[in-house]
Amino acid sequence: MSMRRSVVVGCGHFLPETILTNAELAKRVDTSDEWIVERTGIRERRIAGEGETTSVLATKAAQAAIADAGLVPDDIDLIVLATATPDYTFPSTATQVQAALGIRHGAAFDLQAVCSGFVYALATADNFLRAGSHKRALVIGAETFSRILDWTDRTTCVLFGDGAGALVLEAREGEGTIADRGVLSSHLRSDGRHFDKLYVDGGPSATMTTGHLRMEGKEVFRHAVTNLADIIEEAFRATGLNADDIDLFVPHQANRRIIEATARKLNIDPGKVVVTVEKHGNTSAASIPLAIASAYGEGRIKQGDLVLLEAMGGGFTWGSALIRW
Ligand code: UT7
Image (tube, rainbow, N blue to C red; front, top):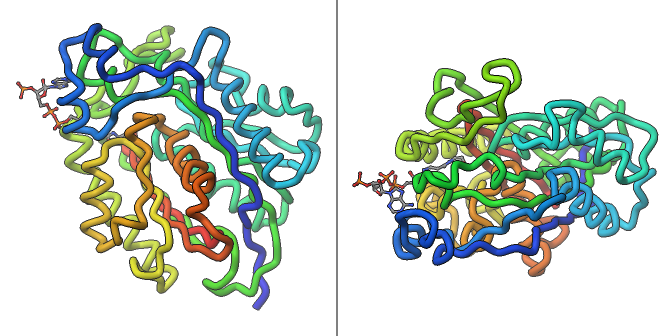
């Protein structure tokens, strides 16, 4: 039976030029390159410059993705932008990207699921395209976490970075089988009881301030591998696919130890795992599209490949998606 699918037709990214190394961080807070590398795998991260707001990074990633798809901005009729660091409280960063791209039709909105934002945005855009209301979607993950870090708190400021990545999805008819190109499954979860394990201590309604990121890292770590393995197993059950079918595993890039433990738990071959946390740090909603773009740039993704995505973040929120490239 024929079935509408959201097929990835373009991929792009943008990273700010400024690199902040662990050695430079060790001059600001009581930390060391050795501790950061051993506990997280992170060696450096990018930091957005003055004027490089989330919408600026997002627009550049979007332009790269549209060009990669061989399209022009007017071909896009939906923008779903995942971010926890919008330029302004409102209007949405997505509408600023829409304006910067010169698009005057369709719809653009932000989506907030912190580090799971890209998986949530992908699932949302996929549902719009499969419902038939829109034809081509830009799914963007973009963040400037450097703006909400407490640069005196060594337990968080060494972990995060800035960047943006984007995919273009196009609605196409498939056969309705797992051999189809496109998003084959998405599974999303949340559990709001865990608010205080990873949050920002400010916001327009609660404090009328922007606030800073606060995290109980060990607690987040404790839940991460179990939640991520569960949501991936759910994707396998729903599609009948398994770890051996996966060509590329693109996890959220928070910590190399979480990535490796999740891959081990699911018996995913280490050679199939994309790891960019070393160079990007944790870029929250941008981490998955940045990792996809990195693998794509290295020629690690071919048409027909099965790509598995997963993420977990504040809320807690978590999710997985299977894409036939
Ligand atoms: O993207 C959203 C999801 N976020 C995550 O997935 C993050 C999950 N959590 C983690 O990745 C890890 O828990 C961290 C990397 C945040 C921390 O690693 P850990 O192995 O859980 O370390 P810890 O928090 O238990 O800290 C161990 C020690 C502590 O010292 P004491 O109490 O043992 O004396 C910390 O004070 O390391 C100390 N520490 C540091 N030392 C040097 C904490 N941060 C640093 C630092 N440099 N930057």
